[in-house]
Picture 1 (tube, rainbow, N blue to C red):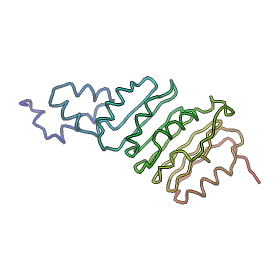
Picture 2: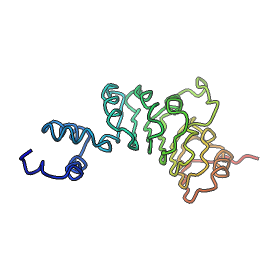
Picture 3: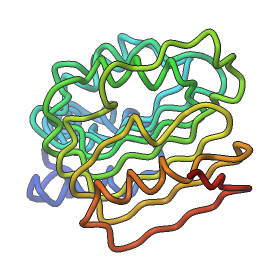
Picture 4: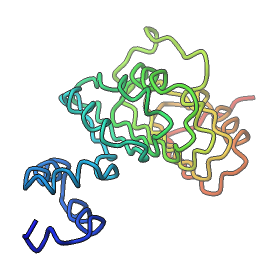
Length: 217
């Protein structure tokens, strides 16, 4: 405690990990000394940004979730390498999720996460889904019986990048202000896009990238 850096007020000391490049560096900072470890572990916002891959250990995720307390959660899940099984751990923390980004998720994986955090999502403001569903066989998939992430009534930013199967008609958000929609699906039905726009009157910014939209009578 006689070390000059440890005479800093705790709120100033906790700024140090914010300037570290990765979560791994933040974890290493907790081993500098007992004082740093106790201070950093109790500072919940340091652990509220989760980057998940298929190789992320579930015990590690559980440890981090135990440190976030009531802080908003920002979650990025990268499905490109392999499936992520830790999503079931988010159920008790669903109402703390502030942003959710899914990279390379298949249709089934998007459904599984939606079920895992079903219920109110009052803090969710950003939802990004970059689907890898083009790898799936649409005939083998069961469509959801209700809208996905329907508890996100205050969602502001919605990004959906799809290829072959994932559809806008499974998403219903009353208050988004920004939509980014990208599809490479041949002849995507324009009626689905129009239905989404009609159900989202608060939209202020719309960015649509599509190879071809199919007009329907």
